[in-house]
Image (tube, rainbow, N blue to C red; front, side):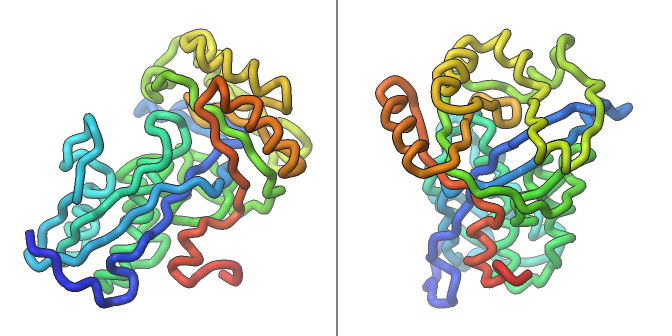
Length: 292
């Protein structure tokens, strides 16, 4: 592999891949193929992985360094870049550098966000000019959460998580705890005791306070550390599970209250202080934020 000069804007620069929270998650049915039908609300937080794309001369897609336990060919950023090449016939290559800040297996969507950033950044850097809608369709091939990161806005989601409607909600301060366990999404969705027939609700009902996560009881029965983290957070605010976990979080009306809880909890837990965002910082990087 030969690196080229990163002299075009965007090459060699840091691209954000933000985390997400599921502020609510209801399982309202199941398709014949086994996929679950959901209602959920996605909001971004200002914790990010950072990706750097280096131009190469040989047309190959590679990683500057691999993640522990993940083969290069299985890495979602590599798969996203290869998918773009396959869909468009693009012959360009890239070496992808990932500065991993988000915990893996925590329900914050780090891998999916990395994939979405790869799709959006390389669409620009390779001059492919695919629409956001097409990139969302490609993203769904990589994972159910990828489309919302491509979409770039807080969203009310239905279907398997791919039917998105922009939503504006309070951008509160958040404290996130990552328990010392890795929750496998597949395990939770296969669980016999998982609720699969919740009543559908409206956006207004969510905003009025219906925040349940149908995965919560199943996860707590299997992972004591998640249950303990929820209990610790409950001393400060309403604790919630994001996705299938393992991360749990609580929202706060003021930065001061969030900082206070963060300082108390950080002595015993892996904990993060963050701010909710209705718009992904990736849109600003692409120059399409706020007024789109």
